[in-house]
Length: 364
Ligand SMILES: [Zn+2]
Image 1 (tube, rainbow, N blue to C red):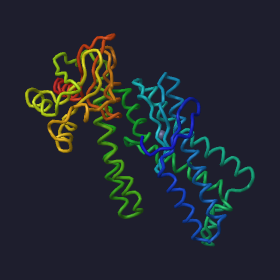
Image 2 (cartoon, rainbow, N blue to C red):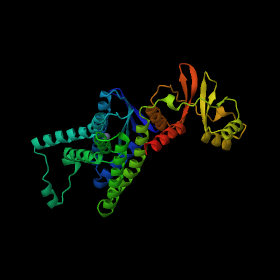
Image 3 (cartoon, rainbow, N blue to C red):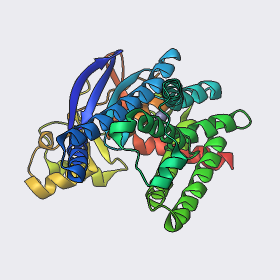
Image 4 (cartoon, helix red, strand yellow):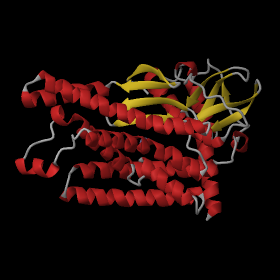
Protein backbone atom coordinates (compact mmCIF):
# COMPACT_ATOMS: atom_id res chain seq x y z
CA UNK A 1 0.00 0.00 0.00
CA UNK A 2 1.27 3.46 -0.85
CA UNK A 3 1.61 6.31 1.63
CA UNK A 4 2.59 4.05 4.47
CA UNK A 5 5.32 4.19 7.05
CA UNK A 6 7.06 0.91 7.85
CA UNK A 7 7.10 0.39 11.60
CA UNK A 8 8.91 -2.91 11.82
CA UNK A 9 8.14 -6.60 12.23
CA UNK A 10 6.13 -8.08 15.07
CA UNK A 11 5.85 -11.88 15.27
CA UNK A 12 7.15 -12.02 11.70
CA UNK A 13 4.39 -9.75 10.36
CA UNK A 14 5.31 -6.41 8.84
CA UNK A 15 3.54 -3.45 10.40
CA UNK A 16 2.66 -0.33 8.43
CA UNK A 17 1.14 2.98 9.48
CA UNK A 18 -0.87 4.88 6.89
CA UNK A 19 0.27 8.49 6.99
CA UNK A 20 -3.34 9.77 7.19
CA UNK A 21 -3.35 8.28 10.67
CA UNK A 22 -1.04 11.12 11.68
CA UNK A 23 -3.69 13.60 10.52
CA UNK A 24 -6.15 11.84 12.81
CA UNK A 25 -3.76 12.16 15.75
CA UNK A 26 -3.23 15.89 15.12
CA UNK A 27 -6.96 16.42 14.69
CA UNK A 28 -7.71 14.59 17.97
CA UNK A 29 -5.12 16.71 19.74
CA UNK A 30 -6.65 19.95 18.46
CA UNK A 31 -10.21 18.80 19.30
CA UNK A 32 -9.30 18.06 22.91
CA UNK A 33 -7.08 21.08 23.20
CA UNK A 34 -9.72 23.49 21.94
CA UNK A 35 -12.26 22.34 24.50
CA UNK A 36 -10.19 23.21 27.56
CA UNK A 37 -7.14 25.04 26.15
CA UNK A 38 -5.00 22.56 28.08
CA UNK A 39 -2.10 20.69 26.50
CA UNK A 40 -2.60 17.91 29.02
CA UNK A 41 -6.12 17.28 27.65
CA UNK A 42 -4.78 17.31 24.10
CA UNK A 43 -2.14 14.71 24.95
CA UNK A 44 -4.68 12.66 26.88
CA UNK A 45 -6.85 12.52 23.75
CA UNK A 46 -3.87 11.46 21.65
CA UNK A 47 -2.88 8.86 24.23
CA UNK A 48 -6.43 7.50 24.18
CA UNK A 49 -6.54 7.17 20.39
CA UNK A 50 -3.15 5.44 20.39
CA UNK A 51 -4.25 2.95 23.04
CA UNK A 52 -7.43 2.26 21.03
CA UNK A 53 -5.30 1.52 18.00
CA UNK A 54 -3.14 -0.84 20.03
CA UNK A 55 -6.40 -2.70 20.79
CA UNK A 56 -7.22 -2.66 17.06
CA UNK A 57 -3.77 -4.07 16.24
CA UNK A 58 -4.21 -6.81 18.85
CA UNK A 59 -7.56 -7.57 17.19
CA UNK A 60 -5.80 -8.00 13.83
CA UNK A 61 -3.19 -10.22 15.47
CA UNK A 62 -6.08 -12.33 16.76
CA UNK A 63 -6.99 -13.04 13.11
CA UNK A 64 -3.42 -13.34 11.86
CA UNK A 65 -2.09 -15.70 14.52
CA UNK A 66 -5.17 -17.94 14.28
CA UNK A 67 -4.71 -18.11 10.49
CA UNK A 68 -1.08 -19.06 11.10
CA UNK A 69 -2.26 -22.08 13.09
CA UNK A 70 -3.81 -23.28 9.82
CA UNK A 71 -0.60 -22.54 7.89
CA UNK A 72 -1.95 -19.35 6.35
CA UNK A 73 0.46 -16.45 6.40
CA UNK A 74 -0.20 -12.74 6.86
CA UNK A 75 1.87 -10.37 4.77
CA UNK A 76 1.28 -7.24 6.77
CA UNK A 77 -0.92 -5.33 9.14
CA UNK A 78 -1.69 -1.74 8.15
CA UNK A 79 -3.10 0.84 10.52
CA UNK A 80 -5.53 3.23 8.85
CA UNK A 81 -7.57 5.99 10.51
CA UNK A 82 -10.66 3.80 10.08
CA UNK A 83 -9.07 0.73 11.70
CA UNK A 84 -6.57 -2.00 11.03
CA UNK A 85 -6.28 -4.25 8.01
CA UNK A 86 -4.50 -7.60 8.19
CA UNK A 87 -3.68 -8.89 4.72
CA UNK A 88 -4.16 -12.55 5.40
CA UNK A 89 -3.19 -14.57 2.34
CA UNK A 90 -6.54 -16.33 2.13
CA UNK A 91 -9.40 -17.48 4.30
CA UNK A 92 -9.41 -21.20 5.13
CA UNK A 93 -11.96 -23.30 3.23
CA UNK A 94 -13.07 -25.38 6.18
CA UNK A 95 -16.04 -23.68 7.90
CA UNK A 96 -14.70 -24.47 11.37
CA UNK A 97 -11.35 -22.86 10.56
CA UNK A 98 -12.87 -19.80 8.90
CA UNK A 99 -15.12 -19.40 11.92
CA UNK A 100 -12.13 -19.42 14.25
CA UNK A 101 -10.06 -16.99 12.17
CA UNK A 102 -12.99 -14.56 11.93
CA UNK A 103 -14.00 -14.76 15.55
CA UNK A 104 -10.56 -14.50 17.14
CA UNK A 105 -10.31 -10.80 16.23
CA UNK A 106 -13.39 -9.65 18.17
CA UNK A 107 -12.55 -12.23 20.87
CA UNK A 108 -9.39 -10.25 21.64
CA UNK A 109 -11.50 -7.13 22.31
CA UNK A 110 -13.87 -9.16 24.49
CA UNK A 111 -10.90 -10.26 26.58
CA UNK A 112 -9.54 -6.69 26.83
CA UNK A 113 -12.97 -5.36 27.88
CA UNK A 114 -13.36 -8.15 30.41
CA UNK A 115 -9.93 -7.58 31.96
CA UNK A 116 -10.65 -3.83 32.19
CA UNK A 117 -14.02 -4.52 33.75
CA UNK A 118 -12.58 -6.86 36.38
CA UNK A 119 -9.84 -4.35 37.18
CA UNK A 120 -12.23 -1.37 37.39
CA UNK A 121 -14.67 -3.36 39.47
CA UNK A 122 -11.99 -4.53 41.90
CA UNK A 123 -10.66 -1.00 42.32
CA UNK A 124 -14.15 0.48 42.66
CA UNK A 125 -13.78 2.68 39.60
CA UNK A 126 -16.92 1.81 37.67
CA UNK A 127 -18.78 5.12 37.38
CA UNK A 128 -22.38 5.34 38.53
CA UNK A 129 -23.97 6.07 35.16
CA UNK A 130 -27.39 6.97 36.57
CA UNK A 131 -25.86 9.54 38.91
CA UNK A 132 -23.74 10.95 36.10
CA UNK A 133 -26.80 11.40 33.94
CA UNK A 134 -28.58 13.32 36.66
CA UNK A 135 -25.73 15.75 37.20
CA UNK A 136 -25.13 15.98 33.43
CA UNK A 137 -21.46 15.20 34.09
CA UNK A 138 -19.37 13.72 31.29
CA UNK A 139 -17.10 10.72 31.37
CA UNK A 140 -13.97 12.75 30.71
CA UNK A 141 -10.79 10.95 29.79
CA UNK A 142 -8.80 12.32 32.72
CA UNK A 143 -11.04 10.62 35.29
CA UNK A 144 -12.41 7.70 33.31
CA UNK A 145 -9.64 6.71 30.87
CA UNK A 146 -9.87 2.95 31.43
CA UNK A 147 -13.65 2.95 31.60
CA UNK A 148 -13.80 4.74 28.24
CA UNK A 149 -11.33 2.23 26.86
CA UNK A 150 -13.57 -0.61 28.02
CA UNK A 151 -16.58 1.00 26.31
CA UNK A 152 -14.63 1.42 23.06
CA UNK A 153 -13.62 -2.25 23.12
CA UNK A 154 -17.25 -3.29 23.61
CA UNK A 155 -18.19 -1.01 20.69
CA UNK A 156 -15.46 -2.61 18.56
CA UNK A 157 -16.91 -6.04 19.27
CA UNK A 158 -20.45 -4.90 18.42
CA UNK A 159 -19.34 -3.14 15.23
CA UNK A 160 -17.19 -6.03 13.99
CA UNK A 161 -19.82 -8.65 14.74
CA UNK A 162 -22.47 -7.00 12.53
CA UNK A 163 -23.29 -9.98 10.31
CA UNK A 164 -22.47 -8.24 7.04
CA UNK A 165 -19.61 -8.92 4.71
CA UNK A 166 -16.67 -6.67 5.13
CA UNK A 167 -17.10 -7.19 8.87
CA UNK A 168 -15.93 -10.23 10.81
CA UNK A 169 -19.56 -11.00 11.61
CA UNK A 170 -20.24 -11.55 7.90
CA UNK A 171 -17.54 -14.20 7.77
CA UNK A 172 -18.84 -15.82 10.94
CA UNK A 173 -22.32 -15.98 9.39
CA UNK A 174 -20.97 -17.42 6.16
CA UNK A 175 -18.93 -20.02 8.03
CA UNK A 176 -21.99 -21.05 10.08
CA UNK A 177 -24.12 -21.32 6.93
CA UNK A 178 -21.38 -23.35 5.22
CA UNK A 179 -21.95 -26.19 7.68
CA UNK A 180 -25.31 -26.85 6.01
CA UNK A 181 -24.79 -25.87 2.36
CA UNK A 182 -22.07 -25.31 -0.20
CA UNK A 183 -19.83 -22.34 0.17
CA UNK A 184 -20.94 -20.16 -2.73
CA UNK A 185 -24.59 -20.48 -1.68
CA UNK A 186 -23.60 -19.59 1.88
CA UNK A 187 -21.68 -16.59 0.54
CA UNK A 188 -24.71 -15.37 -1.40
CA UNK A 189 -27.06 -15.66 1.56
CA UNK A 190 -24.59 -13.95 3.88
CA UNK A 191 -24.20 -11.12 1.36
CA UNK A 192 -27.98 -10.64 1.08
CA UNK A 193 -28.37 -10.59 4.85
CA UNK A 194 -25.61 -7.98 4.95
CA UNK A 195 -27.23 -5.76 2.33
CA UNK A 196 -30.62 -6.03 4.01
CA UNK A 197 -29.04 -4.96 7.31
CA UNK A 198 -27.26 -2.11 5.53
CA UNK A 199 -30.54 -0.73 4.19
CA UNK A 200 -32.06 -1.07 7.65
CA UNK A 201 -29.12 0.89 9.09
CA UNK A 202 -29.53 3.69 6.57
CA UNK A 203 -33.23 4.09 7.39
CA UNK A 204 -32.72 3.79 11.13
CA UNK A 205 -29.86 6.27 10.86
CA UNK A 206 -32.08 9.00 9.44
CA UNK A 207 -34.25 8.83 12.54
CA UNK A 208 -31.62 8.19 15.18
CA UNK A 209 -27.88 8.59 14.72
CA UNK A 210 -26.57 9.81 11.39
CA UNK A 211 -23.43 7.67 11.78
CA UNK A 212 -25.61 4.64 11.12
CA UNK A 213 -26.25 6.00 7.62
CA UNK A 214 -22.53 6.02 6.90
CA UNK A 215 -22.06 2.56 8.37
CA UNK A 216 -25.00 1.34 6.29
CA UNK A 217 -23.60 2.71 3.03
CA UNK A 218 -20.17 1.30 3.86
CA UNK A 219 -21.64 -2.16 4.50
CA UNK A 220 -23.89 -2.04 1.44
CA UNK A 221 -20.99 -1.34 -0.89
CA UNK A 222 -18.72 -3.79 0.90
CA UNK A 223 -21.25 -6.62 1.00
CA UNK A 224 -21.78 -6.51 -2.76
CA UNK A 225 -18.13 -6.33 -3.72
CA UNK A 226 -17.03 -8.91 -1.21
CA UNK A 227 -19.83 -11.27 -2.22
CA UNK A 228 -18.84 -11.21 -5.89
CA UNK A 229 -15.22 -11.68 -4.92
CA UNK A 230 -15.94 -14.51 -2.51
CA UNK A 231 -18.33 -16.20 -4.92
CA UNK A 232 -15.69 -16.10 -7.65
CA UNK A 233 -13.07 -17.49 -5.32
CA UNK A 234 -15.30 -20.31 -4.17
CA UNK A 235 -16.06 -21.31 -7.78
CA UNK A 236 -12.33 -21.36 -8.51
CA UNK A 237 -11.61 -23.71 -5.64
CA UNK A 238 -10.04 -26.90 -6.93
CA UNK A 239 -8.97 -25.45 -10.28
CA UNK A 240 -5.38 -24.88 -11.23
CA UNK A 241 -3.54 -22.63 -13.65
CA UNK A 242 -3.29 -25.44 -16.24
CA UNK A 243 -7.10 -25.55 -16.46
CA UNK A 244 -7.27 -22.06 -17.99
CA UNK A 245 -3.87 -22.00 -19.68
CA UNK A 246 -3.85 -20.31 -23.10
CA UNK A 247 -1.16 -21.70 -25.34
CA UNK A 248 -1.86 -19.42 -28.30
CA UNK A 249 -0.64 -15.95 -27.56
CA UNK A 250 1.21 -13.07 -29.15
CA UNK A 251 4.68 -12.22 -27.97
CA UNK A 252 5.87 -8.68 -28.62
CA UNK A 253 9.51 -7.57 -28.66
CA UNK A 254 10.53 -4.66 -26.42
CA UNK A 255 11.47 -2.66 -29.51
CA UNK A 256 8.10 -3.16 -31.27
CA UNK A 257 6.20 0.07 -31.74
CA UNK A 258 2.83 0.88 -30.24
CA UNK A 259 1.29 0.81 -33.71
CA UNK A 260 2.40 -2.83 -34.00
CA UNK A 261 0.81 -3.47 -30.62
CA UNK A 262 -2.44 -1.86 -31.84
CA UNK A 263 -2.38 -4.15 -34.88
CA UNK A 264 -2.01 -7.18 -32.61
CA UNK A 265 -4.85 -5.83 -30.45
CA UNK A 266 -7.20 -5.44 -33.42
CA UNK A 267 -6.16 -8.71 -35.06
CA UNK A 268 -7.38 -11.10 -32.42
CA UNK A 269 -9.14 -11.64 -29.13
CA UNK A 270 -6.16 -10.80 -26.96
CA UNK A 271 -6.25 -7.70 -24.82
CA UNK A 272 -2.98 -8.27 -23.01
CA UNK A 273 0.44 -9.16 -24.35
CA UNK A 274 3.70 -10.48 -23.04
CA UNK A 275 6.81 -8.56 -24.04
CA UNK A 276 10.22 -10.23 -24.43
CA UNK A 277 11.33 -13.61 -25.73
CA UNK A 278 10.28 -17.06 -24.46
CA UNK A 279 13.32 -17.29 -22.14
CA UNK A 280 12.95 -13.89 -20.57
CA UNK A 281 9.66 -12.05 -20.41
CA UNK A 282 10.51 -8.46 -19.53
CA UNK A 283 7.04 -6.95 -19.25
CA UNK A 284 3.32 -7.15 -19.87
CA UNK A 285 1.31 -4.80 -22.02
CA UNK A 286 -2.38 -4.19 -21.33
CA UNK A 287 -4.92 -2.57 -23.62
CA UNK A 288 -5.18 0.38 -21.27
CA UNK A 289 -1.44 0.96 -21.27
CA UNK A 290 -1.36 0.78 -25.09
CA UNK A 291 -4.03 3.47 -25.31
CA UNK A 292 -2.40 5.60 -22.65
CA UNK A 293 0.93 5.26 -24.46
CA UNK A 294 -0.62 6.28 -27.81
CA UNK A 295 -1.99 9.41 -26.18
CA UNK A 296 1.19 10.42 -24.45
CA UNK A 297 3.99 9.14 -26.67
CA UNK A 298 2.51 8.55 -30.11
CA UNK A 299 2.40 5.39 -32.20
CA UNK A 300 6.11 5.15 -32.93
CA UNK A 301 7.09 4.75 -29.26
CA UNK A 302 8.49 1.31 -28.32
CA UNK A 303 6.27 -0.92 -26.18
CA UNK A 304 9.08 -1.13 -23.61
CA UNK A 305 8.27 2.48 -22.67
CA UNK A 306 4.71 1.71 -21.55
CA UNK A 307 4.80 -1.94 -20.47
CA UNK A 308 4.37 -3.00 -16.90
CA UNK A 309 7.63 -4.46 -15.65
CA UNK A 310 6.31 -5.96 -12.48
CA UNK A 311 5.55 -9.46 -13.79
CA UNK A 312 3.43 -12.05 -12.02
CA UNK A 313 5.01 -15.37 -13.03
CA UNK A 314 2.81 -18.47 -12.77
CA UNK A 315 3.25 -22.22 -12.66
CA UNK A 316 0.73 -24.72 -14.13
CA UNK A 317 0.12 -26.32 -10.72
CA UNK A 318 -0.68 -23.09 -8.87
CA UNK A 319 -4.16 -22.89 -7.38
CA UNK A 320 -6.38 -20.60 -9.40
CA UNK A 321 -8.01 -19.24 -6.27
CA UNK A 322 -4.67 -17.96 -5.07
CA UNK A 323 -3.76 -16.58 -8.52
CA UNK A 324 -7.07 -14.71 -8.73
CA UNK A 325 -6.55 -13.29 -5.26
CA UNK A 326 -3.05 -12.11 -6.20
CA UNK A 327 -4.27 -10.57 -9.44
CA UNK A 328 -7.00 -8.66 -7.64
CA UNK A 329 -4.68 -7.38 -4.92
CA UNK A 330 -1.76 -6.52 -7.22
CA UNK A 331 -3.92 -5.03 -9.95
CA UNK A 332 -2.25 -7.13 -12.64
CA UNK A 333 -4.39 -8.89 -15.20
CA UNK A 334 -2.07 -11.27 -17.03
CA UNK A 335 0.89 -13.48 -16.25
CA UNK A 336 3.27 -15.80 -18.13
CA UNK A 337 3.14 -19.47 -17.13
CA UNK A 338 6.46 -21.29 -16.81
CA UNK A 339 7.10 -24.97 -16.39
CA UNK A 340 10.69 -25.02 -15.19
CA UNK A 341 12.39 -22.50 -17.46
CA UNK A 342 10.03 -23.20 -20.34
CA UNK A 343 7.27 -20.71 -21.20
CA UNK A 344 4.14 -22.82 -21.76
CA UNK A 345 1.46 -20.15 -22.09
CA UNK A 346 -0.32 -17.26 -20.42
CA UNK A 347 -3.28 -16.75 -18.10
CA UNK A 348 -5.31 -13.57 -17.84
CA UNK A 349 -8.14 -12.39 -15.64
CA UNK A 350 -10.57 -12.42 -18.56
CA UNK A 351 -9.90 -16.11 -18.93
CA UNK A 352 -10.54 -16.81 -15.29
CA UNK A 353 -13.80 -14.88 -15.51
CA UNK A 354 -14.90 -17.01 -18.44
CA UNK A 355 -14.31 -20.14 -16.37
CA UNK A 356 -16.46 -18.63 -13.62
CA UNK A 357 -19.26 -17.73 -16.07
CA UNK A 358 -19.28 -21.23 -17.54
CA UNK A 359 -19.44 -22.70 -14.05
CA UNK A 360 -22.29 -20.43 -13.04
CA UNK A 361 -24.23 -21.35 -16.17
CA UNK A 362 -23.73 -25.06 -15.51
CA UNK A 363 -24.81 -24.70 -11.89
CA UNK A 364 -28.26 -23.43 -12.88
ZN1 LIG B 1 -11.55 -8.27 12.51
